[in-house]
Length: 555
Image (cartoon, rainbow, N blue to C red):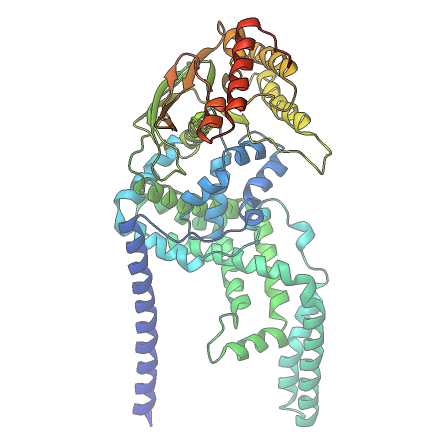
């Protein structure tokens, strides 16, 4: 009988080994295809989940500095984030989302991460080992695992000794069976029923926390796996578990207890799940993990951020590999932007531009000529330069600065704000940063277009003058040609232009020196075959205003 049992045991070991080895092989094939092609299927991370680390940091550090929500939305930065987000874990997504928001003009961390990007770009062996470990952790929305950096005391369970007592009843009953069989059996059945009632009565109150805490335990296990990688950059994980984080191993153990029976499909999963229920292991394990995290929260924070940084760094290395051209930025003290062949990261075939923009810039041009796309490209790259040390250009020089925009203004129905009120509130953010003497580059598209012409020009010019004499660079795009005359001495003028060929309006989408000298609104009426009388009248009214500086009345 011994030989068949030995054969069965060896067979199980071989089958298990084959399953896990081929599973990793399949994962590696997929990962290598992604790196070879520079493409991947982006996971749909929920915004409220992926933003939790950034929001927790702001809440607990009382800091609102960084890329604010209006700027993020103006520049479609969520789409930029999704373009870069090759992360394999939830904390990697959260770390990258925070990184793209967290501008620090002192640049304390930007260049330090460059070594990490280079490691994952060039060392495929290390990269693949790390990716396999990160893929095993995977993503789980709404775990909010970074909140454990800050709060614990209100999460401990009350009367935990009772759960321990009730969990021991089945064992005690089993022992009783050796002394009094009938009483032991009755006691065992009664303890099972009692614990089932306790479990299902209290499970709902703890369900969300269990969902989160099991991912916390998995994060700790991931850190232990990363510590096994033989490379100096991963010594940080070894040091964490040698130091204060040594006790975190307990959380990893209890996390495995919580996970018993959760992987559906195995023959013993149902059995393991009932073991957890009748022995109230969920409640005991949860409390043990919380106690461990209270004692070692600094080590957990360091571990969480180290894993997130590595996952985000791989994503950034992948993003760079997918680009036709990119450069690392050069930072200077002078208030200017100097760049060559800058591109917008969300356009498939972007027209690139080169220029030198000084402290105050006014860009004019016709509708659809490329003004808005240009200043958005500059603003997005200014953010990428200071967060991931990457710019879509051949050359980039700037002063480290906060980036703030006022562009895609919308009526605020909930706050009862009109378009114009929303505009001036948006602009006030820029004024406030300047008043606080913060290094800043502001990007304004169509300043104060929500009001009448006279007040728009007057207020716009006044705001432009104030900004020109205060802290920060200001880059404005506008249709209002009057501003080029009023602010000509304070602002450098650039423009985008168009031409009409064979009845079509053509744009080169290139920035040119000087103010715009053309308008295309009336030309477009002609191209779209409006009545000739409308076009003649429009041209006469425009010419009269240009010559007389007053509007001609209709006869």
